[in-house]
Image (tube, rainbow, N blue to C red; front, top):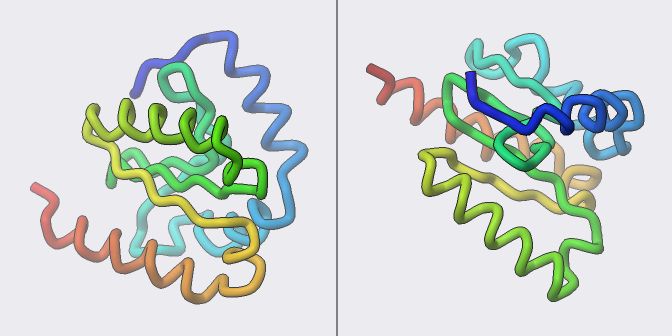
Length: 123
């Protein structure tokens, strides 16, 4: 189990209740071990962050970005966050909300291909 700041747990629960349409749409496609048996959590506290989707077995984090993530301040914060998580062995995949809403099949395929590669390289 990965460590996290305890104060994030309540915020994560609120985010799960109030998920966005893109989060809901992707969750419908990846929950219940639908992708090669990999289990995902949503709005998962991890270190000092709450990540949108997390697969412990594959060390995969999936982030869905709204338009605010394309502003310079957000891009800088996202880059620092991704660098910290990557340095700990996680892979961070980012998709825009628009991409999820318009091209869900392509998004799911990218995740599937990553997991398929992980599956063949698991110890």
